[in-house]
Length: 120
Image 1 (cartoon, rainbow, N blue to C red):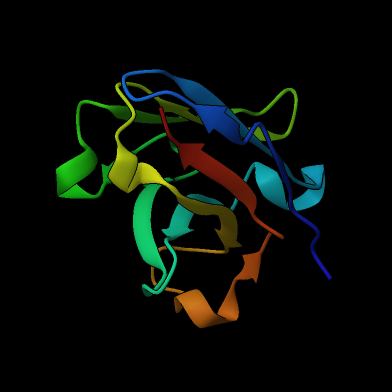
Image 2 (cartoon, rainbow, N blue to C red; image 1 turned 180 degrees about the horizontal axis):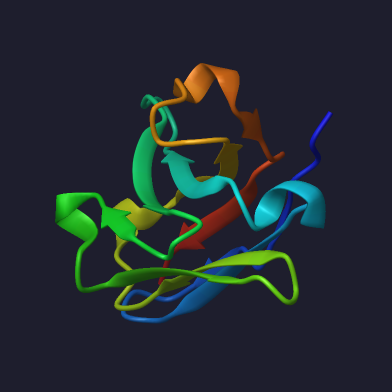
C-alpha cells in the first residue's frame, strides 16, 4: 500500500501564503501523476491541481495564478504553493497519486489530509 504523508497546513490570515508538502515512496513518486484535492466543510472533495512525471501541470481554473504545484524528484516530495489565500480556501487538502492520467481517481492512493484554515 502506497503511503502519502502531507504536511504544511495551518492557520493563515487572508492574503497570506502556505506551502503544503506531500512525501511519497520513491518507487512510485517519479513515475506517477501526483495531485492535490481539497474538501471544505459540507462540500464534496474537489480537484485542485496535478502534475505528471513529465512536469506537465493542470489546475482548477479558479485557482490558476494563485496556486502552484511542483515536484522534487530528488526528495520524492510534492508541493503546493498557495498565495493570496482567501476564506474560501479553507479546507482539508489531500495528496493523491495514480499511475497515469487515465487511471480513475478512485483507483489511486490518498494521503491523510492536512487542514488549511484561512481566518482573520
